[in-house]
Image (cartoon, rainbow, N blue to C red; front, side, top):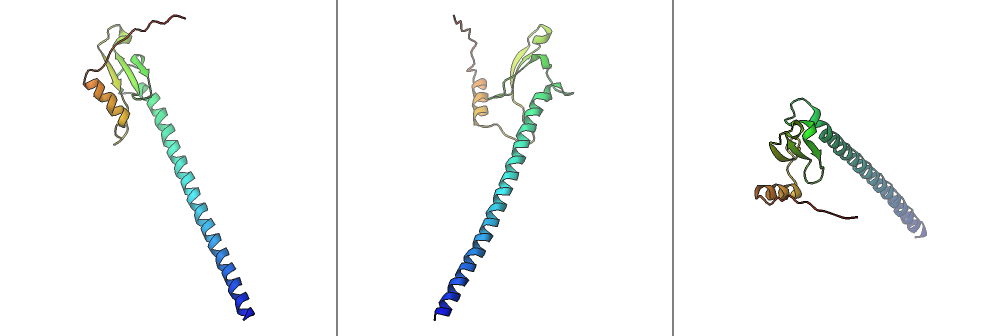
Length: 128
């Protein structure tokens, strides 16, 4: 009876250790995959940020780079079309997208404000 109990305890310990090692290996693999995915996503974001900055100097870009002001939040560029030549034709809120990417909620709200002519020009004077 003691021999059977000892055998059962040893079997239980072995099963626990095997299960522990398998779980640890599986979790390690999941963490490694998540790190790899995060690294790839980070690279994509960085590459896109670089692309946003160099796009205006690439051939075929429709606006003169001197007419651009990089904003980067909400919209990518504010374009003062023609200002560098001394004759402002129009002001454009420009958002750059790649592939099938869609506007996020903030970008959609900005687009709606522009479409509904809820845009003002202000001069704020401050004294120091």
